[in-house]
Length: 294
Image (cartoon, rainbow, N blue to C red):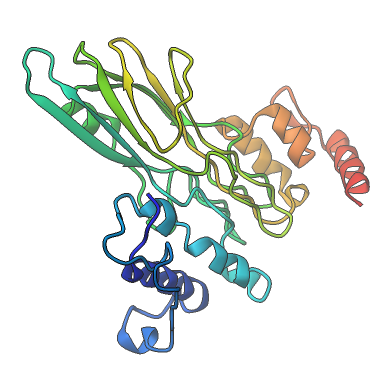
């Protein structure tokens, strides 16, 4: 989960640039020819044989982030805030219930995308891969795995005039009745997705086993029968100050469960009482928050 080959680096660099500066132009050689991508030979973005390259997305999917940061001041209307970036690749393996045959199942899932300068970020959707994830019904139909819970996580999207996309929570159990192995290929568990131009950061992700263990996000460990694994995926960063967000949009987020009543007040300065926005208290709360920020 470290080394990236040059064609991977080149592809995501080019894709990110095209999204930012010329999204309306179809992919073609004329559009790509002016773009030069360089990385030192032997570096993690231009590795050489015999360097291992498995799970290279854990680095490669972050190539877009510094490019968007570099462009966020000259062309702020053309970029998105930091998102969860790297896909969360989850793998379970072990013996089947009534035999010594083995199973191995891997699936992808995503945290929140960064907010855009004109719209909220997409929830449980990754950039730059654009992958959303595998439905629970598919996972349970092809592998001895039960998904006890899957839902968007409240307050994980970075606050902003435009909110970052939400992460998601999944609780999983292997049903073989035997010990199984869980391989983690995760990121954004230490450093959050950063908000842009006054937007706040998203939340980081975490892995928790029902026995209290918190495995390293890039590890392989054993789970026992009956134990569950909880995955909490990171949220995307916000765009522009949350004090600029329309109170009606904050209220709708609260009604949908995307933002808690407490966060509405603490981060957005929107006071919600009895399911409605108190306009007077909201105006005063935002005035106080702006004066403190100065």
